[in-house]
Length: 229
Image (cartoon, rainbow, N blue to C red):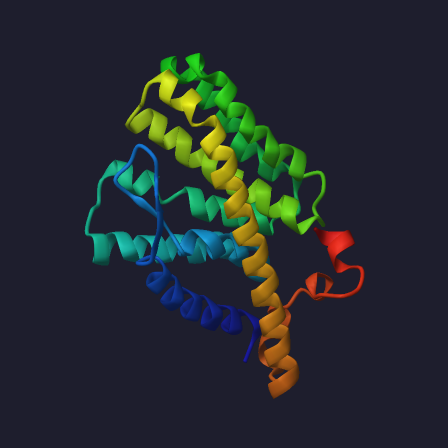
């Protein structure tokens, strides 16, 4: 089986698991009737397994299927809300520093809005993806940059479609820190566990067909924690 076909098989299996994970709520999104789901914790890892663009596409397909066939809510706001996770996966899988431009663009859009201008300090969180992009081998920083990229896109979409008051945005600063740090830990742990499990399966069952998905540099070793955390 060719490598491209193997990726397609992985995307299909990931999509099925992703649709299930999308139905498992974890916490409520503040200011919204929507919830964060289990899918939000591990979806960005596909960017590193499949590379940035295929990872983006795979998550977008899962979210589109869920929107059209399960939630059955197709409108501009719902479509815009598809963007945060695919772009987080793109960030997680990309080695280029230019990936941080997504969050920087969101900063500009946020501060350009009349409400966002009064809560501009909130958007300073989105400098984190820029800083993290200078440390491409630090897996936790990659996860942190990824979740704040999703946060930047989601918040900007929220600002332009729903609004909220400047006071609410400012009040969310401390909540955001706890929320996004938790997501970063979840993304980091998810990738570490999945990468380890795939490697274990390959070695145990001698299945070399999925060997290309494994990143050997992120497998546990004596120096792993110091080098990649």
